[in-house]
Image 1 (cartoon, rainbow, N blue to C red):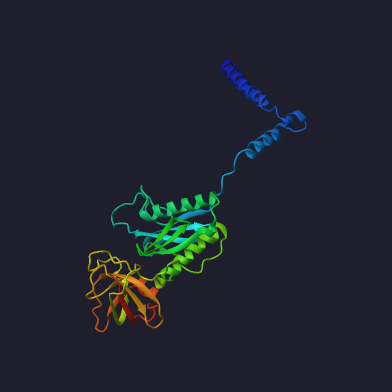
Image 2 (cartoon, rainbow, N blue to C red):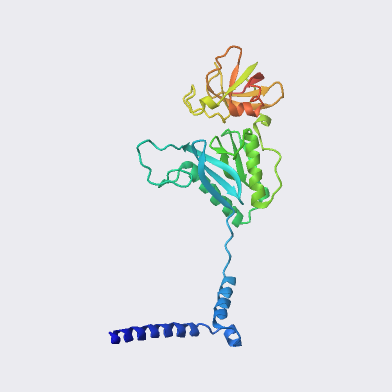
Length: 311
């Protein structure tokens, strides 16, 4: 027993001596040569020297937070701690009698694959951090209306950075689409590089001059519809998006583009016919919520309009 203990102690002692010897062998630095610093100070000096020669990684400025919003999955993108926008996903509801394997702090079941909302938020977060790391000029962040896709887009110079649709919202906002697009772009400009705020959206719908001659002109009363029909099938078979620039008309062919001008304020918007209606007497056209917001019709509900049939 004593012999075994002795061997063990000897081995341990040799190991310690070996470590000490190794430590001494690696401390031949200018600090040791001065003979004034203790060994602990020598190690600290060496570490500091190593760090000073290693490039420092740029700190990430964009992050995301997954939570719930009105019963739906939501992923909010933060830029320097400020919420910039939220991607909305599907409704979150655990089926009764089915066990959920795991859930995060927000009560959302964990998934093995990222949802569409989480994917979009992750891609945008990574791109914003990349732009920051590259020293991108925030003055080149801009926002415009894509007439072909009928959507607002935010660009990093010429590169599309974000497409705004009904799944992209500003946290705690009830503003109309063009104002939200402008506000999101200005938040990115400010948080990315303290660039001054933009004052207008490039090619916003109410300033767009539609291509081609006017085939026909109508006047009448416009109304709008939205929340109760969002996601339902329109008469042409597509899903109704209350924030898209579409409209219902009783006779105009599906796909026809018309310019609707609010005769009370002069604001115009170009919409695409994808539904039938309105079926209330005395009304000529039924606008989506997004289109009604663009011409200032939300508050009053109905109003006199001029309808220019373009194609």
